[in-house]
Length: 355
Image 1: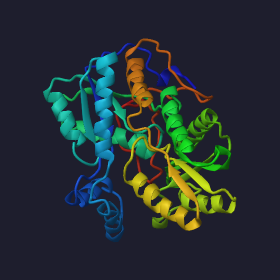
Image 2: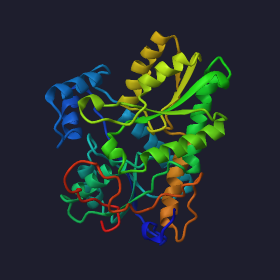
Image 3: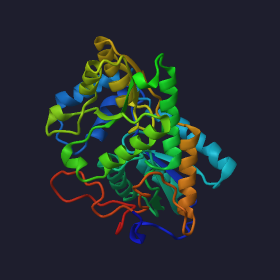
């Protein structure tokens, strides 16, 4: 719940918005350099990297995430042009062009002094929070006169996010040929190693968001399942895995499954390959009808949420909007926020207490 140490109740004047995303390859020649960036510092065997690369090459070496991020930024530009604040938007990725250091150098060249960052993740985890903050810290080290950067709080329980997910879920449910009582509703999110998951509120936040959406669409018997599980490479990861959940759905006697990828704000490789191809193939083999709900993407309520979070951070003593019983997340991250669970000392970060 709210504690003043982690909330910023002062008025802030920003002169730019920075969108920070994961990034993805946009052609066959991009895939291996992109994976080198993603897996830098990790002891990933080359055969594993080659196997991951083949997944991207099935789609011509193109991940949809950059296209989706461009659409998101275009929608946000329209939103702030119409409703404020009148600020320029910059975009930098962690792992592929436009790279974050290049964007921060451009911001410095443009005279930007104080920026508010939105990272394209709505749940707290190492990969969805702290890794972005580590990369922001590393990126500014090579920038002369870098801007000060604050980060928007995560919005997993913000009314705008819940409305966007609920609308997408309802659209998928209505597209089926049966009553929703006959549908197995599964919410999916990226699995995490257990050592990483225990350092975060990831599972609790997902459960809260799923419960809120379930209430809106009128389904209380939803399931939270995990995808993109790399447990075969080492330690155990969060379960249940979606493949096991589909087997269980078949044994329940129901014929329709609706999957809402609540843990992803837009389509990228894990969504289009793991769900649209692999989960769909498994469902077909099991005799299940599978419908995948759209990610929130550029849904108007989601876009409005981002603008509202910016206004919130610019305002003195703001009224922070949230649904459910967990309260609004802090504006500043705690020193031990979203640790990786790996041995060794944590890397320095921005946008946290003491950062």
